[in-house]
Image (tube, rainbow, N blue to C red):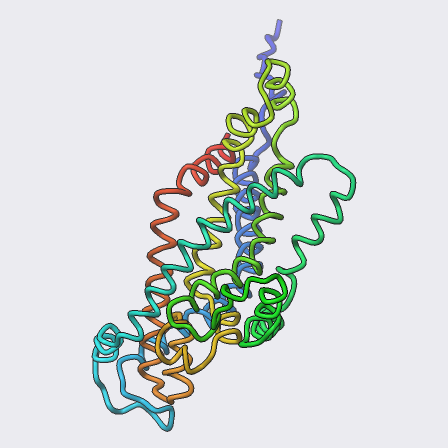
Length: 328
């Protein structure tokens, strides 16, 4: 009998070229993803380079020259513009005023915004109207706010008339002309303008606090203040820190409200100057473009370092939590 040799079965075996086809598909998928990433990020990258990095480079370049804005800069002075800025007492006053605005905004706006947000987070009749009213100052244009408060606080203006009508004439001050109180007056205006933003931001954070936790605390016998202190505020921490970061950077770069509200004569003496208004006064109007660019670079470096330190020591926990949560 003729023996029949059995051949191994090929059932289940991958067809020839299957591995190379899979690798080819993976490579094509990877290329497609990279093309999408490049296509989506290139326009934003081009805009960022053209409107952020390139102007920053020009600012650093012009800051090394004594240049009045006509023709190419030729009078190279190195870091003399920076040294001159820190030797100018008016610029030192501007630094001090920015520090007052930063600290004052955090210490004044924060508690006010937190208290109002906690109250507006409770249910009562007319809550929507109150929320709208506290947000109105923030949506007003800065120029409008500056002109409005300048008219109110000017000598013989609405504020003086109000105090006199209440029999408080002794409280009448030269709100925008007194060198000792003008920065505190401007801090009040800035608080009125921007506290609504803090309130809305905190209300958004409060909406993310789980009701189950507050209800459980209430069932356990905790009062309203205890619930806010031990449950709500810890969960509101990331929102508060984000607001602090935005408030700090905005206070360092504040310009428009200060520029419109303050009196030029008082500002020239340094009582109501900030780094931004000092930069415009000495760079644009005095036509000292090289010096003005040096002040702009100083302002950028201070803001950048402040942002890095804040992120390193206060926002680090929130950022790490977000990254860990995404990884999980």
